Image (cartoon, rainbow, N blue to C red):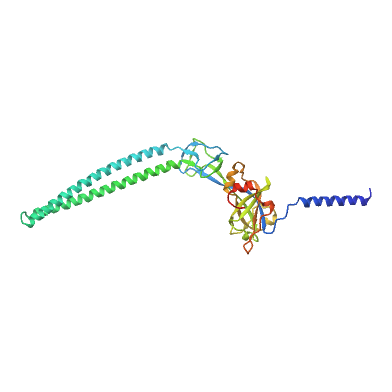
Length: 337
């Protein structure tokens, strides 16, 4: 084979390879569309004991999906139950004392009325000089004593009523602590870690279960200073995951950092890592996350696309490869489009 023919074959092979490489390259992003790589994350929740004590029950296992309000674990409340019974007995005793104080007020009021009647009678007789002034002075003193007794009885009743309020507040505090002994899921979540077992002693504030809020998914990406100021909070975004590269997932911009920072190492290129970047967060709609709850996995890598708004208050339309499938758009139910 001649050298000329060999050279021609090599040239054809190179051209074929270059053509294949060019054809396999992704379409360039339209002007005004930018992207950044990241991973799907979810907010974690440490379910800690409000009170210390022995763990009586842990009703979920790692990996379980739990609904909002579902009980997760219970701290033993035998001591608190006894304290509540004692507080309720104290309330009953205070109410009995208050009833006695009310009876004392009624008695004092009757004595005061009698003393007032006697005083008026003595005053009338003294005016007609029928009785001596000493008798009038005695009746007036008795009326003053009756008034003082009535004031004391009313003060005692008020004190007993305040004692009832104090005992009821103490009982309510104990009831609150008993309620706090049951840890309930604050929202739809998946159990990530089970950190305590029945029989263990935990202190107040010690985590017992760690949850991942699977309906609260987001991705953080980093954009340079030339792009980040043109991204609007509340604007639509798109996410594509490495495991589903052909499916565009709707998202919404919920945060744009007001301060630049050095970019973490997971950003792809050294040039980007050496630059100061702005963190941008995009969140997946909660209805969509709930609809695909069995598929939700945190840590999955992907890429987010965002639109840059121009000074004339316009933004580009999403290209065809970033259009959201109708089925997913329907599940999102938030009109991101």
